[in-house]
Image (cartoon, rainbow, N blue to C red):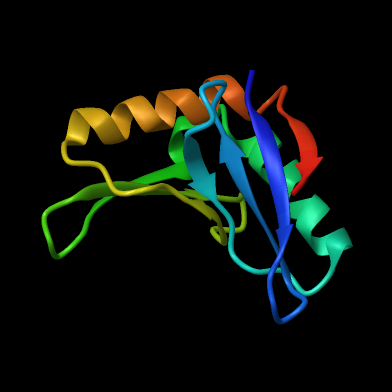
Length: 108
């Protein structure tokens, strides 16, 4: 089962990583100024993870594949890691869909 791992950056801001059951990071957040904002970000990931239209598939300039997860207002709420192939990226999306809705929250 997946989990959201919450961390505090050196500048006092907060961010999270959604990790799959095997511990691999499958989605990373932007920085948040408050824990309340961070928790809203996690809630948004949980609500939007199952919706295909919220994923934007992209290719970086180096040819690697990644995706972003967007909220209903089109704001980016998470970025994936880089994948060597489009199929790897698509597997990453499937993993977010599977893990995010029921993932717990852990402070790092």
